[in-house]
Length: 399
Image 1 (cartoon, rainbow, N blue to C red):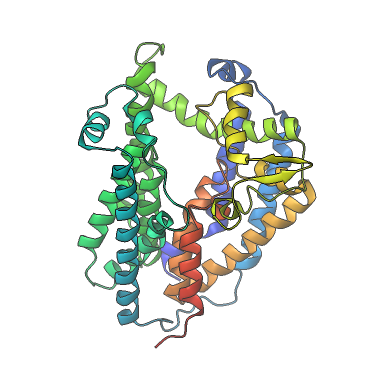
Image 2: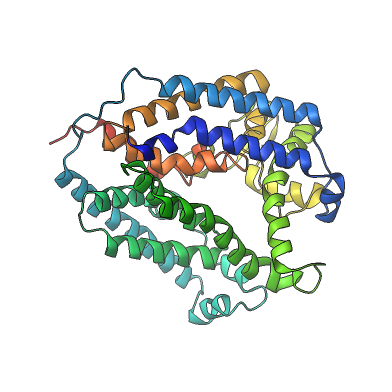
């Protein structure tokens, strides 16, 4: 087994992520919550229950990733096929972005609005986002980016051409992130590329690991500077910009845990519609965003926005990755569900060692492990297009 694949073993990553998030929640005081105008909604017992769900997830990962031998077999797909798949996916991503930009332009987005965002004019991002709503199932083509990025990283490892297409993908993802205040768009192309680069390294790449670690706080800081600091907090926050970014970074992840328990307290536990665990269903025109609860029609997305405006701070509106599953299923079924998700990811990692087709999908979903304290990426509409592409690559017969 390559040293890079060992470093990226999902049990290790999940244990680190869950430990940091729960420890951060323990250390975040009521005074800290008061500073962000949010009531603290969890106690130590709640964090223990969250730890149980995290443990069940890691247990599933452990069972799925076990095997007797890590001997690398022949690739399950030829490099010629990989190049062909990459070209097709790149074309689809370009098409998705072209439609997205075309729709925004038709709604009134122009060069001036883009210039306002780049020049950091106050509230320009809020105004620009009104033009950027896509069409589910069509502009969703842009969300093929995670698995496309992983494939480009594999082509780099194989010594094939990758720079031009990755540069275009990075530009488009960054452009989208700036206009839509959506830094996740950057991580969706950056993380899979870095992960697959590490995955296939025969020795530990210190530079890649270092870049992977420092890139997150740097990107987070840049977006906080453009989104929050320049618009408001530069004149109100008592401290330096570094103090502000550090506090905001902890706040984003701790409030996600807190919001999950706030939702549980106000709405109760499931079972109910699986809005968080299978969120992509509610983003498709076939199913729709509205669900029926009792005798009322309810839009969960709009309901969440209203909920956090009323009960909490709408700046921190992440529902939490594990606690949100409890809203869908209740505690016992949530434990079973997250164990099965862990089992599948563990199997995916194990098979990735001997077959790059599995590695493409594993590296595309790796961001979901990192984001689990914040929200359930695996069931989201953001990941679903990459999931479909990954499954198609796995089930198609090699030529």
